[in-house]
Image (cartoon, rainbow, N blue to C red; front, side):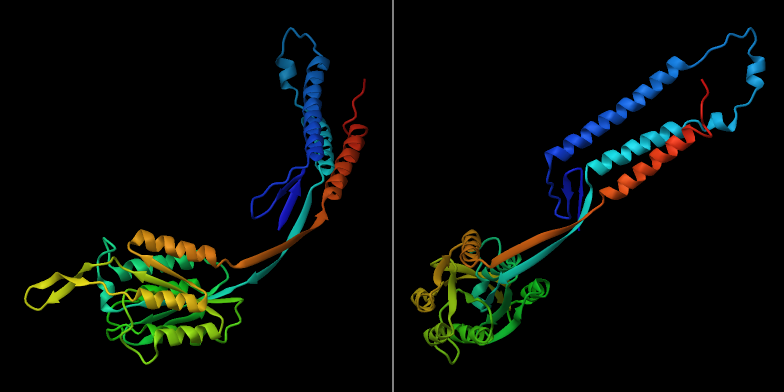
Length: 347
């Protein structure tokens, strides 16, 4: 809903449009009104008659008549008439804004590795999985009108959340992801195949998979490159992210005797396969060695895959000036009638 008054348009989006002629008329009208009030007060003081009395007690005992007490009504009606005419000239309008939004949404499946190697704490002060989840949530919050889903995988793969535009529900599912929900291992090919199965019949303008892992494929019945060719057949693009610093990294280990302690284990990432997956599907390969780099990677993907949104809007106005013009005319007629009848002053 829009309201326009004195050349100013107000809307729920708080934007203002100023029409200079209307503003000039409105300000001039206010100056005229102020001049009328000043002239009336000054004339009343000048024309006030005075009579000298030696004793004022007799005058004080006399009471004011009804006409004297309500004589202010006449000048008040004149002021109100001028106010209404000024507002009418400023051309107030109300209007309803109609918008037509055309969106070419993107269908996105996030594939997240939850194997035990994601417990490595090289993304200090947290482990790889925690940082990955936080960056995925940031990515989701930046998207508009896209359907997004989540696949998690270790030795097996399953859909944590199907494609949805309810980002609140999706974020809750991301928070629920943790270690131990799947038997340990890394089935990259199965994760891609699962994500492809969710995307193959979608009507999205563009379909992509964002795969994050820190290992090499060591489980599952489907080879990663076979799954990548399957994705390419359905025009699904895959962005692959290898997470983790190279070399030996600290991993937490629960010792039955000494409790939690840390051991060094090597980071094994099959970068060659991840690069090939991205190449086959027309995607891109990224390497994240820190939480900061992972954040930059998701930002890059966000910029590469923009949703096209077109907004066409128009405003249908309804003129309101005549209501104020009628009110001003009514006040003016009442002022003339009362000034020449009940409140008439004799010379």
